[in-house]
Structures are given as structure tokens and as C-alpha cells.
Length: 115
Length: 113
Image 1 (cartoon, one colour):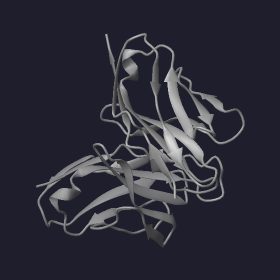
Image 2: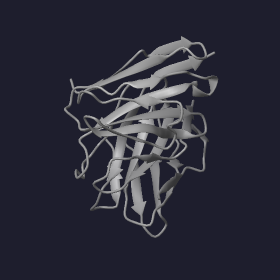
Image 3: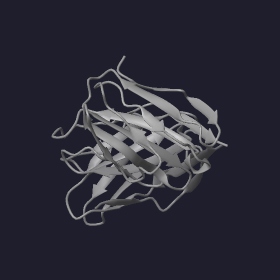
């Protein structure tokens, strides 16, 4: 089954304790992206990756890091989480640039609480 | 730059009544338009999209949206809603051939008996 998976689905942590949220897709997609969803703000892009070893900042990158060492994986790293990073996080993937029918597939979400 | 406006944060409606969720966009160039649905405690699913061709697009569960270039709108409608349509609905745009989706702030549709 074609899908985007994220782990963990729920995470409660404390300020300053490094964490990683994993994202994996099995569709051989080139493009992957992280979003955060906050009430009243919709989804905002954190980082994206056009392909392996190619990553760039989205609209709200502060406090986050990403890496793309393999095509299928795109982990989101919070080196020193703070309470304002409490949010619902979504990973998404799609074929890549140049495709009109370039539907983005979303993971199930990771609900992060930073105390 | 492009932006998406969903003016209604919440829309309550009775079952079997019609509903319209409004979406307006701003862009200096042509864009593709999307509606995503998020059911409680789930991820986002693509509901329908406009890429080109007929300005009226339909989903398999009875929703439709009409692209109106002059009004820069892509409103979502359903003639008769069901309890199971209770969800949050997001309008989004992206450039043709591009990757980045720009989302609106979402509209919570609550269908009541």
C-alpha cells in the first residue's frame, strides 16, 4: 500500500530535550515536506526536500533541522524543543517538479507537546 | 507570492442541508487549486482539485467546487450534507509544475442532527 508513515504519533517531552520525528514514504517520491498545523493558522511549511541531499527552508524553519540521506526518509529534528513548538506535525511527499498531477500524500500526523 | 483566504473558521449546518465553504486566493500567475479534508484525529486527504479544463470539479462523495478566475475563488459546495462530513476542510494552491502547497487557515464543518 502506498503510504507516508510517521513516528511517533504522539510525543510529550520537556524543554531542551532533543527529539526526532521520522517520516518515510514507499512511493519513490522525490519531493518531501514537513508542515506544522496550529489552530487558526492552517498548515505552514517548515522544511522541504527536492531530492536526496537537497533540502531548503520553508516558511517557519526556526528551531528545526532536517536531513535527506535516503530518498524514502525525511526526519524532522528538534535540537532544543521549546513550548512554542507544541503542534501537530505532518510529513508529505509527491513526485516532484514538472509533474502537473503532482498530488501530495500526507502522513497521519505527529502530535507533539513540549512542557 | 500566493495566498489563500478561508474567511469562515467554523460552519455549523444541519444534516441534509446544503453547505458552501468559501475559498479565495491571490496570485499573480495561474495556480492549481485543491481542497483537502481532515477527519477528526486523521491526516489530510485530497478531496478534489482543479488543474485545467472544466471549471466545475466533483469528488466521489458529493462535494463539488467551481473555479472562478474573475472572482479568484474556489468555493466548495455540497447540496445535502451528512453527519460523516463533519471535518476540517482546507483550501490550498500551488504553481503548475511546482511542489509547494500554500494552505488556507481551514474551515471546521460541523454537521448536526
